[in-house]
Length: 333
Image (cartoon, rainbow, N blue to C red; front, side, top):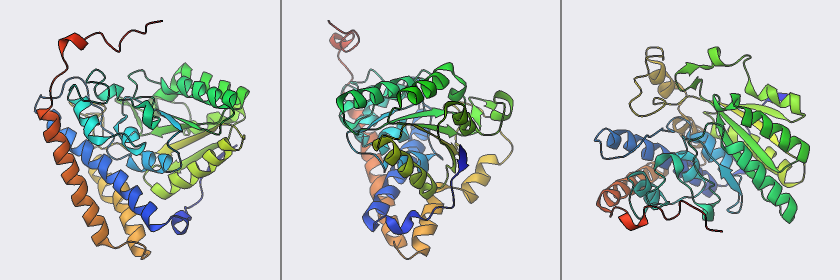
């Protein structure tokens, strides 16, 4: 059955430190992405970069419900998921710059950041690549008898891939402890969802597999958090998979360099002014008297300093040695 999540009421159930952490995660993602937007234009960053700015509430709201031993599978737009799951920001920046001390020794770059120690299976250059991997994680948890949960992130374009629908079916048949999260930002690369999808809501596809399908406002941390909390609780307790669709908008193009001629005039500016997830979060917690604006401002300063350090250290870090060219590429049996 497909439902729209009710207005969030969760703020009173999250402690002050949990709320401050959620804001820090979102602010870190935002500053990381905004800075990459600037740095990519210098030509110093190799490869492609796809920015997550505007979608921070989804990664933060989902991962706030996960444990360190839970798993996430990401997309090509994966920086936000990596940060929210606990990956080291400085090591991520070095990875994006292709440096030896990056999370993947400079071999993965922006689209393939992974850290198994943090339960991050990796960003994925294959559209719709995460859902099958998460089915594997869910099966592992069932076989081992743990209560670990796997989360697969996918975009609205990726939700049209056969891998996505096959994974929904497999997870339903095997009753796997997984959550499929569709970050519906309205565009598959440059194609509006009005052209590439039949129907309004991806979450309705859950009905065909006997899964709960839930739709939330992806700009609202509390709405995402509450829906994810129920889905994760259900998965841990043996209730099986859930499909969660988060309606959201990205602030930048599909990739850095995208001219975005497919977007309406002032489309992004209007969203930033009226629906920005950081702005809405701050307004809610300060108006409730739970957190002072000064505390949020302090986090803003801390995060900006962190990102400044990350960029400076990444630029100064050593490149990988040529002797490491084919290590970590092939598996030796």
